[in-house]
Length: 79
Image (cartoon, rainbow, N blue to C red):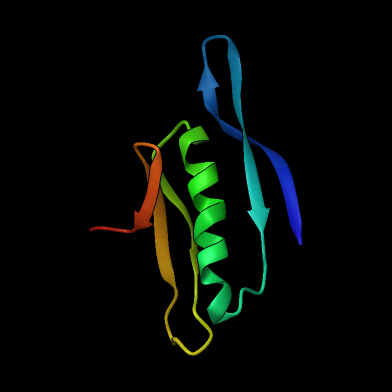
């Protein structure tokens, strides 16, 4: 399932500020994770605001990996 949604990002003196958000829920088998990285590499240069971007969880992992977009690339969340 994938959808592109217009989201409210706050308010400015000129009115409400909007941005587009891409939501996707997919099953990526462990041997297909390279394909996921390729998709994220293609998206990363087009992300305007750095920060939280989502998460993925490998099939047998108990916890998800949170990732962020920053400076035209993506990577795991660093605290």
